[in-house]
Image (cartoon, rainbow, N blue to C red):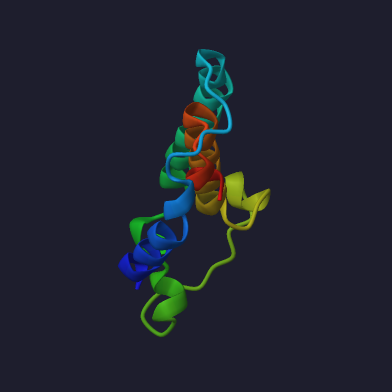
Length: 104
């Protein structure tokens, strides 16, 4: 399913692949800040959650895994820290390259 989403997204953003919103080396400064924040969130999530929690096994197989509400660490402040990290990395790539396709 994910590959299908990537193919559709690639097809839909094809007209903008060569369109740049900005071209400057200075755009790497905020991009690096976004990348650093994203990697920091990934590291903290990895230390707070088990591998089965990260992939969602407790939700998919509730009879086989303990259901517990995490109210500490990053999960105490945001519902989906991995999504925030993904968004920060995508924003960083958009800022770094200036590509309209990534912004889209």
